[in-house]
Length: 183
Image (cartoon, rainbow, N blue to C red):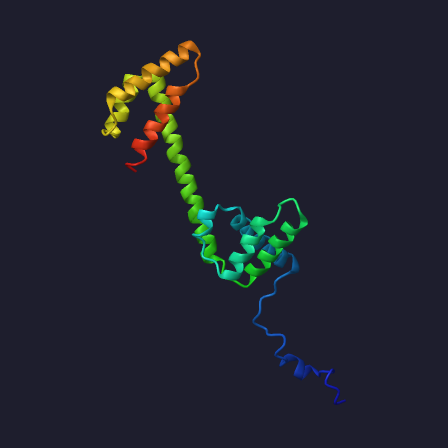
């Protein structure tokens, strides 16, 4: 009866190997969490060099991400490296990494919104002429009215001749240089 592998009911309740305070996490939930961590790792691998430097990572994780970026994506080693990155991320606090990724995503969306606004402004000047130029000058007085009117006339000529949209592109670059610097 002194066999240590047998527990009586009184000792079983006091056994420290099964703490009552731990929450039960199903195997499916663990797999989902692992997949999410692996997706965060894949986002890290897909970032540019400049963006990678802004992400707070320890050396081990940074080395794993660097290695994954060098591996041919069509090979099985890439998939295994992503799994390894996911494994490394299980033992780390993901909050700073996720916040940095969200900040990069927000910057990207803001940049896209600014470019869409520039495109709308360019299209308005090309299509409506003086009326649109006056609206743009009201918002951005540093722009040159004469230059905008020249772009409008050049665009009209190009359109009438079915020529390549050189002035249209130049207008966008002019607006980009002068309007984005003010923001």
